[in-house]
Amino acid sequence: MTKDEVLNRLKEGNERFTTDKKEGKLQDKSRREELTQGQSPYAIVLSCADSRVVPELAFDSGLGELFTVRVAGNVANSSSIASMEYAVAHLGTQIIVVMGHESCGAVTAAMSGGDNGYNLNHLLSHIAPAISASGKDAPVNDVVKKNAQLTAEELKTRSTIIKEAAESGKVKIVPAYYNLGSGKVDFL
Image (cartoon, rainbow, N blue to C red):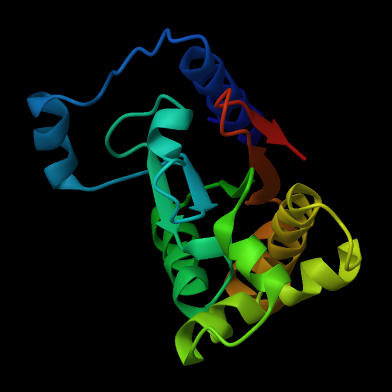
């Protein structure tokens, strides 16, 4: 598939999800057996770890179709970047979707500040640029969208593998926003 075909496939899957017409394909025993020979996911999705946001469901995809990386606030930390580098370099995945979501708790916590302990403070520090770029009085969902956009750009500055793939046209990086109530994904 071309990058445009992959994006269309994601959009069509999301349309099925939002209209309760999921196909639920590629989720059976024969698919599991097929995947024992390897994987070739058509998209990488960096998404929040929030239990309400499940990329495989949101895009009506089956086993082996999405390489999903989930971390609170959909931040690009060393481990999430390394995971995406693997999919780009070794699996040939062409699309990276960085998907924030409505009412993100990690973004809300970052905006609230305070001491959340070493690990959570470190994770939330990745969201600080989006807060700065949005302004201190910005609504949380504006910061979520800005965070997805900045994270998409950050992938190219923090990863030589992703940067070279993007610059050569092998990979396209797309920020997105998931609406909790409708399940609709807006590509930003």
